[in-house]
Image (cartoon, rainbow, N blue to C red; front, top):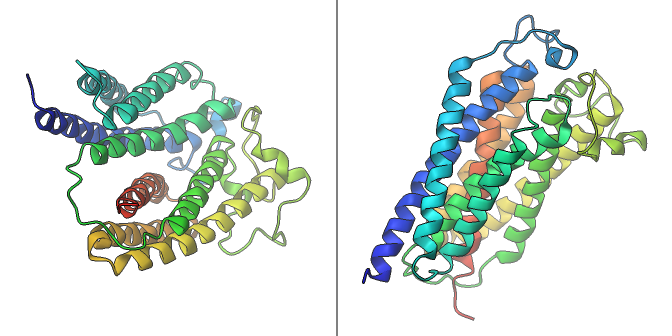
Length: 312
């Protein structure tokens, strides 16, 4: 009978491969989505959101074929990973995360049926967050299949990391709504959105992911401004919480590698966000900002898992 160690090695390899494929899906789907929104169109910014009103935008058949190929391969590997975790007897905890990963993949496949309609906010919103979920669950499976023999840390900074990951998830959700609602041009300034410093009463309605969007949000649109302000406030909170949590973990040898990775990605993500706005929403920077957010989420989860490895 195959040993547990051999199964764990196979599970870890499959999960690592799925992590790479999930990042590839994020990269290609981000390019397709943002390019279709108009970040890569000319003349910019007048062509932004033309797809909503029947305008022409640049299609990339190669990118779409590549996306379907990678997504199909990832789905098949997802079934293989779940099978490896569950047969002949479930091997926990990897089986739990592999099953959740497979369920998410199937859900994203179903949601893809409605994704062709650019007016559906919820479909784009779920696809954006679902892509980040693929990376997170794939990497969580890798960690769950690890050897677990690393030295245990002292006084894990779990509270700050929990709070930071919560604000990061909220920041990503708000960013997904900005993209799904075509609200990028509502607030092109870096420090503030005109005279607004807090969402108006009318602006809070933009948080509804089940609305339909007819046209791209124009400069100063109340809903778009609300999303931008909340997104930026949450980003600053994330920078502070994860930054302090990462610095506290950095002094512990057992956590130094994970903490260093988290802090590096945190600074990179913040810099990409600033540069994306300063560049006038460069397509390349916007894609990098989207992908880096998922990497940061996975790195934060890794540090949290390892910081809680100490015995009670």
